Length: 511
Ligand SMILES: Cc1cc2nc3c(=O)[nH]c(=O)nc-3n(C[C@H](O)[C@H](O)[C@H](O)COP(=O)(O)O)c2cc1C
Ligand code: SF4
Image 1 (cartoon, rainbow, N blue to C red):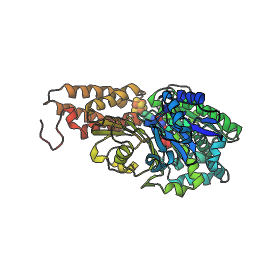
Image 2 (image 1 turned 90 degrees about the vertical axis):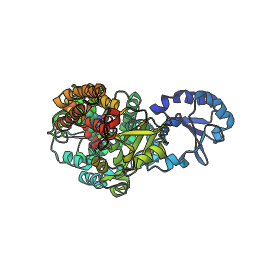
Image 3 (image 1 turned 45 degrees about the vertical axis):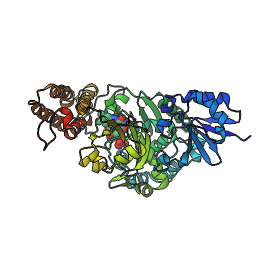
Image 4 (image 1 turned 180 degrees about the horizontal axis):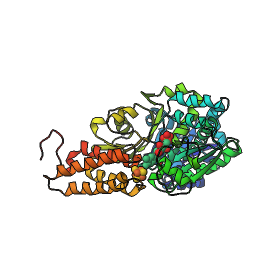
């Protein structure tokens, strides 16, 4: 009998629902010819653990598989891809996957994340080789030409940051990857680090080559032990294979467990061993960053896009997207969603397509009321905005953000005033405390939302005005986007769902 390969994900989302137990059960019951590969997740999280079997027709998927399903799967002939109630189909032909534009996630779920040979066999290291054949300035130019903008939130052009670091004169330069991924409903960084860690390493090594930085750090969210372990193992093999070495050393650091440590200057403080408190800018980290030296700071997805830019050419990457938002973004569906998971699409896709065509609407089956896009500091979008193209500028024009591509869905039972209160409370808890509008403003914000709820209807407009004034102060007076963006969820809730605050919508008579 020929070798049969069975894939059982090692992604945290799959482990959380019993993937290890499923793999152990298959190993115990399947014939000796069966080889179990622990892959990354395909991103169809509602089907995890998704078990795939390699057949002459392609990989055949079954899910969600519980350990107790394994005997019946074997009996039904799943090792040949036969019928079973858990049969999902030939993975590559599933519309959910087939219609995506997977550039950054092209290999995730397909390869063994820790096999460098598998990585290379599926196109890995092509970007690194191309970069090695170019002078540093030409690498930077390719990143500029690709139109790649930072995927961590602020969407700053990656090439301009790299150019600044490359031009700086210093005895030591650094490359730092922000993998703190604290936004609600986001998990793309984690899935990438667990499912294709060499891609991130390759992107960071290219950044080193382009800018003259010889040391790198990955600052990984402390709640991600599997990502940390996977990355550390991958770094060790990459060193053995020459991708890393004296030309570029990489260290994986466990983060401090605070949301604000994802803010780049607080992250630098934390990496230097201090409390994560935001630094005033200037100086820009690109000129005086880690240990006072020029530092490239990018998100996981930004670095992970770079090997594709180099391997396929900047114009091929730029072909995806719209306006000034080029390439693809791995969107993450979460909250009250029937089919939660990762959908990588070119910019320009709409929220409605993501939430309904991919997400299948709410898990509760009730009408969808609001979607928060871009993390806890992102705006709530009502139905009238679900057909806007997901594009940085189109979102900014309506007071929203694309951010890191997290989408958290809420059904018609959501109380938007409570969610606004939560935004202020979150800010009060997570604020680094350095500036007054954020430190004090967020606490006053919680109180004002409470007063709106408790107030006599006649007095509510006065309190609402106070809340708007407070938001204005936070928006314009905060040192960083923590306090500066907390008003986004608050004001969007207030503007689009005034009835939840007990006030009439503008233009409607008071109740
Ligand atoms: C409160 C706060 C939290 C942040 N958290 C993250 C994070 O977890 N990951 C991230 O990449 N960027 C985060 N950012 C954005 C970073 O400050 C920075 O813009 C980013 O790491 C730069 O990388 P990019 O240009 O590739 O997006 C955060 C910003 C703020 C204000
Ligand atoms: S806005 Fe908040 S998190 Fe940012 S510096 Fe001020 S106090 Fe710190």
